[in-house]
Length: 276
Image 1: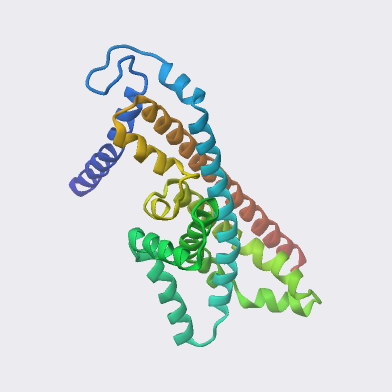
Image 2: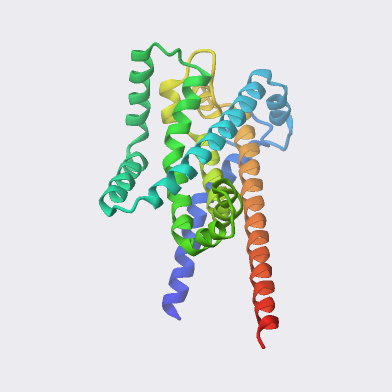
């Protein structure tokens, strides 16, 4: 019992350490004063200033569009990559491919950002939305591969063989057998790629141009100029948005699990009815 109480207290302390700074930031977004030294009264003015800031609204839209496009493309490429890695029969080749994928996962963002900056400069590619999009796709693909690959490995090859024996084409087998089975991994990969792109700073800082900025870069630039409670308001809005994403992901995952259980229950019932 003592060990259980200790683990509970430890978890509570960890979550408090993580969430208290966030709630502190959100609390002062309602401060009538202009700083975070003392709470002088409640106001919505900082949120009104935020939604009246046309530049910030454009940056928010650009950031969401960037995260959506990069995560979609990275999910498509990463899913095909995971299927390709799982299909390798040579263990050494599969291990080498996984190692190359993991190297990108553990590489510091500063190194990745500097490498892309050198590459774009050497190729004469102008820095802006395109350069940031390519960079975000590149560092998101390994994340998708790692999340999709376990689901691909869980799939029984007899399912594919049965579909092919029943006359299904390669595309039908892929779209109606493989994709539905690995769909939870694909969605998890898309969700993680979206969140990574949404809050990335180090890589984006290197490859963004003067005419384009993401939320992370803009917040950093404004924070260097001085404390503004509009940044607190923006942080609060983004926190609520992230919370909605997590809750939505949870309910979708619960729905997919209950649906799979219903399907497995129906298939078991059908088998029992067919038995003499």
